Length: 93
Image 1: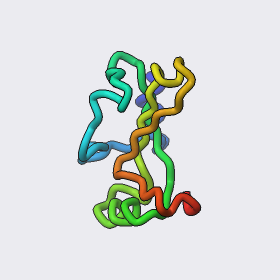
Image 2: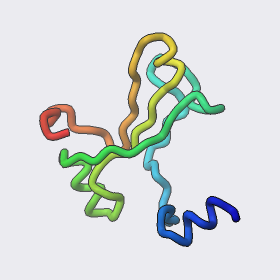
Image 3: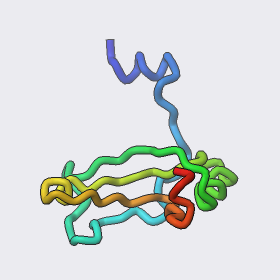
Image 4: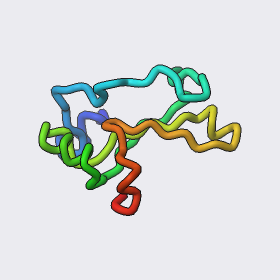
């Protein structure tokens, strides 16, 4: 049995008709290339204004997040948010 097909039949995976990114990063702010398995993509729910606007475009109320693994190896936590996270509302995250 193919696990991905089985997962699809149970509704675990969903196809999306849009890109996850409006502005896909190619490198982190420290210059590490975000390719070749040196990054992790995830999702975090949020109610900041940009996330609410994304929800209005049927993108879900939250952010796609990209973590730079090279930065983590150097002791930093570098995160890219799509859409941009409104840091003035840090308390709602």
